[in-house]
Length: 364
Image (cartoon, rainbow, N blue to C red):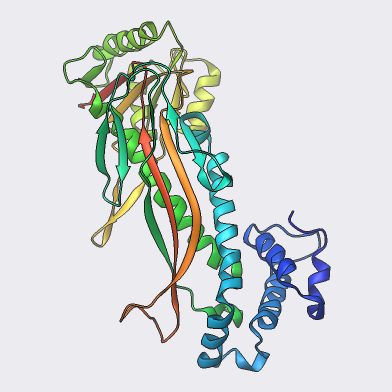
């Protein structure tokens, strides 16, 4: 909780910038004191905002007055959004199981350096994702070398009409979470897409790069690949990574009539086996992107990876911080004669794989 007692905010005469920020943060997280409802919190926020914007209740339907108030007080108002969204992003990534296991995250805003070091010669090139179109820059690292991750600027439009929020037709959490979800999706789309590209960096003619069907006839090839990856990494434990539908294809290799009761229960609950002959399965979440009037999958469900356990987190993610909300002033950028703003922030992604791993292109 970011406040001790919500009741104090109902006394609008005592509203200050600091306790407005605390209340807004609680509302964005849907975290309230016992007995306080979401409706009460949103009404309190609107009352406090009228105080901050120096607007009377009867002014809220006057576009000119609302625009003037936002122009004069936007710095205080959007500073809260910047702080809250940045906090939500970092907290969400830190609690994401995939990020925790495979992503080395640096928050430059917290003072971390954008320097990554390699103890051994990296066996694969470093791929840095730069810009909005995943343009790739390659770099080879030797033992003891360091590198930095290239960051790019990204923006998410804030399209909610402030009048709808002030008059109660839009709530605060909806506004903040729309910005948060847009940036969270952008980061995860970039990270997962880059993870799926690591197999493309393996030599085509390699004992670690396979193209095969997943069937009982090819089971021996998969078992051999798992064994080879383990042996190449000092007999390390390995995991098999892929989308849920890709991992589900491993059931073709296992006679489900003979698997354990626990494995059968897990298959019933998750739709797929959680282990393959003692090897853990790790799901890479599927992502969808708009294409024309429809949606398409971003993550290839015909790829599987055999990765050693205990390796350094091979995805390097840099959150450059310094979130900023700016007014969009270009001609035609305004909607309904209201001020339009963008939330902007910088981040970068790179992959560095210093150990042998296996890649499978599922052919059937």
